Length: 276
Length: 289
Image (cartoon, rainbow over all chains, first blue to last red; front, side):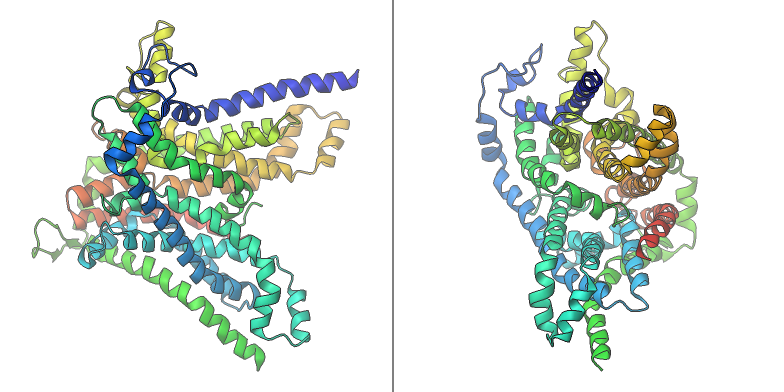
């Protein structure tokens, strides 16, 4: 008898939860579906949900009309490049602060975090003017550097919280056994640090891919990643819902998939370890 | 000796990050501060001169500034209210024993991974457009007059769009926090006859207190910089109705080329953000000890 009540309860909550989840997910689902419709079907009254002529024409047209792939590659280069560069700078720093903490370590960490709290508009104007003078406006290098610097505090913090969980005793033991610093890094730390580095990388790629303040302000066409490219759909000509959907679907698909793999790390990374 | 050697090595390893972040934030911030005391317009080169607090006086006496400050507060407050209350409710719902919990979580989190320009344009065109948007079609199906969301309720529409993006973030953090709640404690309370509401207010809510504070502070930091969603939907309009502080600085600098005035606005934004940051930093600082 008691079992039956809990079962009913479970079903009620299941229905409720799935209902809410589908409602929240619906705009994404609708965008994906619309990307396979003809422009006519996309604005049909009543709306066509599943029963329409599925077509890939929009994907072809988006590519043919505006060289979608080059913007996609810009996004890839900017996201991967800024992440790689950031890790290169951050790994030694996080490693040193986690395993050789000094009196100033906490202050340094907090100061790094404080740079992340600075609103972007506070530095937009000097960066814009400097970039103009240096010819870095609308260049991939420029955006790549800015995004790397913007996310550097998050990378260092995330790595730091992961590295700090590596037990110090293991290091001591390896030192007792006479391992050199290099061997210590190579054989003891690296294997234990890889999972943390991988999740940091994943989160940073997501953040860089979706960043839409600096990319919109610093790029216009040549170096424009997908954020800027999609923004050009805000002044449309004629029917464009299906094409907008196709461009959007391609822009969000890779990150959606990566994001689902990095849910747990997302919490740690974006709360700077305050919630785990 | 080894420790001394290692200590200096450690300094060397931290140095590049410190130098880069210093160049990235402190130097430009200093420049912004310097510009904010100058009369400096890119359209009038060679006319730069020191004006003291002139730009601040101009900015603070501009009605656009006070409207945009008000819009910023309404927008951030509205989104916070929706995402925190909604996030707690959804997190508790998902935390119940249900079928396919993993899938539900995946669906709920998805909007967070959608780039801002995409979510803004999808909402603007495919949902909020009064003629072809889904919301308009639904209201027509019920015989109601379709609403032109972005021109009739522009700020509310922006709040809805941005809330949709940040609700998953809040939900995910609350869910993480809920899962660390001691289930034995809950069962004990249940046996003692505590009702659902009593358990929520006396056990769950206090347990989530930290997560709630963190969500509020972090969202505030990010929300103060909301930009793309406004740029591609309303351009700050109609009038000043959706112009936030960030957007106002952008128009002042990159559309009107008034570097001095925009810099003063930027500094005001920095001060506002720092008030929030102060509390956030204190909370995070505690996790280091």
